Image (tube, rainbow, N blue to C red):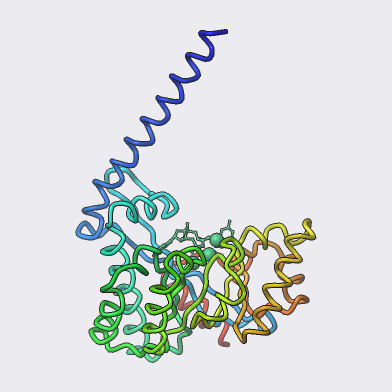
Length: 278
Ligand code: C2E
Ligand code: CA
Ligand code: CA
Ligand code: CA
């Protein structure tokens, strides 16, 4: 029996060592990801529930490393946040999104807002506001096309500085959305104090909506909160027709998820927009 517990710890050490090695591997190869052209942005449409029209899209980062293959952002973003590489990655994503918007506008396409995710580390960066301003000027893109998604937990750490950063971004006429809402325990008064236009209901509540009264209750109160505070409410991670129907009945404005579309390449997104148009 002693031997069993001994080997149990050995396995644990082994797993731990593997995960440390994997993190080092990712961190070291991430350094070349931008120069080696290994990054790509996909777009996932957002629809207005009562019309079905595409009213926006979220840009989602993809990394195909020549050395280690496809790595999920859920794995490499936290590593890039710890190493500080997220600042460079975040700027790449913003620039790439603005380049897409610029190309589309030049072609005369009628496009909706494109949302870019901002990491908690970027929100703490004193250069953030300047970087965004410079990028908008460089690409000559109107700020009304840009939306930024900030997680509830990111906004809650250092609330005062977050608030001043967000206010400066809002002053540029950029739309702000609070991501993963419902998971961060922020208060009603705190949410009311932020210059946020939109609230995204976290996927965990949406996936439980049919089976958990609690999840449905939370969704109902977020929608209610949105009405009181005059914020557009969107549900993420919608995978089933029944979830969309329920959300519609509860008065949720917008939806995003595999049911509507997976994240797609930019050319495919334009094709989807065209289809929805005619
Ligand atoms: P997130 O911001 O909450 O993004 C939504 C995630 O849910 C995306 O995963 C998306 O592909 C996935 N998703 C969308 N619809 C569904 C659905 O119906 N079902 C399920 N199961 N999943 C759905 P992805 O692209 O793997 O990104 C994971 C996370 O990585 C994102 O969560 C975000 O926190 C982060 N991330 C991705 N791109 C960026 C980026 O450019 N910058 C930053 N800072 N973070 C990013
Ligand atoms: Ca997001
Ligand atoms: Ca989210
Ligand atoms: Ca989420």
